[in-house]
Every structure is written in structure tokens, then in C-alpha cells.
Image 1 (cartoon, protein in one colour):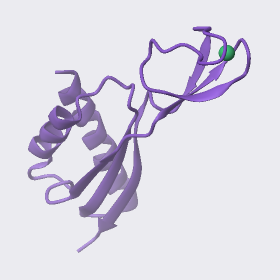
Image 2 (image 1 turned 90 degrees about the vertical axis):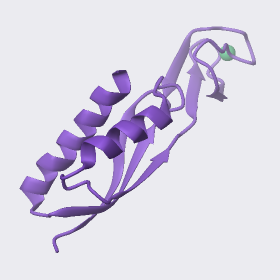
Image 3 (image 1 turned 180 degrees about the vertical axis):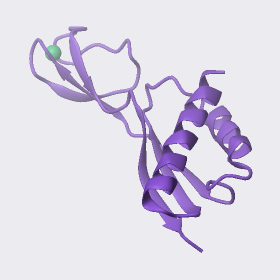
Image 4 (image 1 turned 120 degrees about the vertical axis):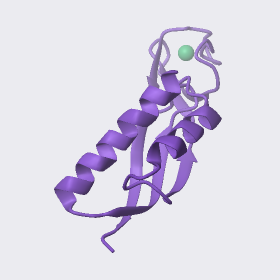
Amino acid sequence: MHEVSLAQSVLSIVEESAVRENFNHVRKITISIGKLAGVEIDSFTFALENLSEGTVLAHAMITIIQPEAIATCKNCTHIFGLNDRLDVCPECSSNKLDIKNGLDLKITDLIVSDE
Ligand SMILES: [Zn+2]
């Protein structure tokens, strides 16, 4: 059900910007969901498509991108792509990592129409 509430919050954000920026339809929405965000992409897309009916997101093309997580080792400053949250630094085997990208969900692009 995690995916449904995430889809709901994405829809709310889009509806708020529709009011603020005065558009009626979204043609295309691109959502970035980090590989380590723990989101089931299929369930999320399915939930969003269902919730979109009758809203500004109805008929929108939904694109999901999954950026790779980038970790910086706090021990040796090595920077590497992280495939799993439990990965350790390949240089020094430290698990003290500063993780960027890969963990969050955000709307990265919104193509709208006021027709
Ligand atoms: Zn290291």
C-alpha cells in the first residue's frame, strides 16, 4: 500500500500545480524513483494510473526513471554506484556511506496543456 500513498501524493502535487499554474491537462509526467527507494515500480504506475482517472493526469504519459544511487565512502572518500543498500565500499569495505540520489521519489518533468 506504500505505492498507493506515494501515487496519491504525486497526484496531489500535480493537482496543486494545476491550480497554481492554471493548466487542465498533463501530457507527460516524468517521475524519478531512486533504485534504492524501495518502491515497486509496477505497483506504483498501476496505482497512479488508477488514481489519475478524471483528474489532470488522466491520459498523461507516465515515464518512470530510476537513477542509480551514488555513494561516497566516509572513510576513504571513494565514490561509487550503489546497487544495494547493504553494499560496502569496494576500496576499503567500510559501510559508512553517504548516499546521494537513489533514495527518493520526485517529479522531474511535467509537460502540460491548457486546452
Ligand atoms: Zn572506502
